[in-house]
Length: 409
Picture 1: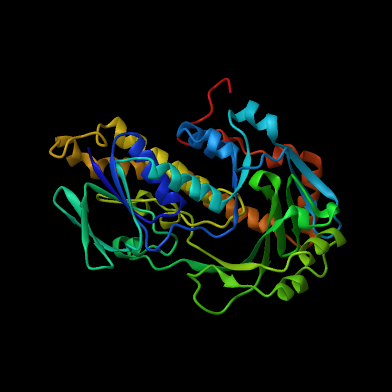
Picture 2 (picture 1 turned 90 degrees about the horizontal axis):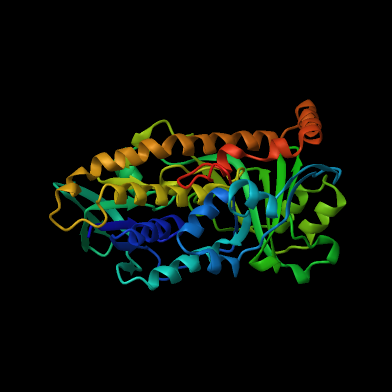
């Protein structure tokens, strides 16, 4: 069987490992941390990515840790008035063949780790960071930070937005700050006053700010993300800055009472200065020879379409399926089909980059709409009240991906 090396043990890297192992590959994952861990932020999982996770046999395990909100509502951060809403729940299942769910990053990450631990063809290597790659002949050799090397037939670079491997291969600089700061918190719902608890996705829109909240962990916890304009000093590649709750409270001082009450009810916040790249310009940003770039290493994006993790998981399924269809993953060590890996990875990149670029661009546009001021915000609110669900539903996104919804779904 083919040997797939994966740099990075985050959600993207573990998804690539599982997708490839399911279809016949031997996989080695190299994670720089000494333990597998994820911080406590939440993730929204649209039907497009839930179809993939269900396809991987994770439906029952997911059902034990996700929440299934029945509604997404958009409200004014200044007046608390509802501007528009989108049905979730049964509506999403009927329309797109899978539910809309919300989950803690750590729960999804641990689910993937647990699943991979149960597969003999997967080796999880902790405290092993990939420092570089050489493509020689019919394979790849990665240099690990402990002075060791590893060899395989191809490498999946899933080492995040500040990818060392991307820098080596593309030499196109680092992600740049957006001027937006994301304050993230997760709070036990039972610790909140009853009026602040919620089992729905709520987006609060205001001038140069917005807040998103949704349930996770079966609804027991509330995940809250507040985005404001500003800058932070220090290492921009490290997202887990300690946050001053008072700074956020000052930024939210002009918002409506219910939103202020929520912000004031939470003390521990983590601060994430958002840094991104422009939307992808071509397949060269997602593959180079025998190296496939995946997730944030290829297409970091602002979280204003809630699709960062989803695009990494879609990448993983597309890559594995394309390699399997060509007979690569189950091929023997001397199989001639392995010679075609660079062309297959180019095809993977050609298939994925337009969708990833579209999502990146739409997320950026959403940020402009969410943070609109003056007449523009008035027009946004009027359009939302008039069209509501038609504006909030995203058929091209939710029905697309590597496992598109059936024609009668």
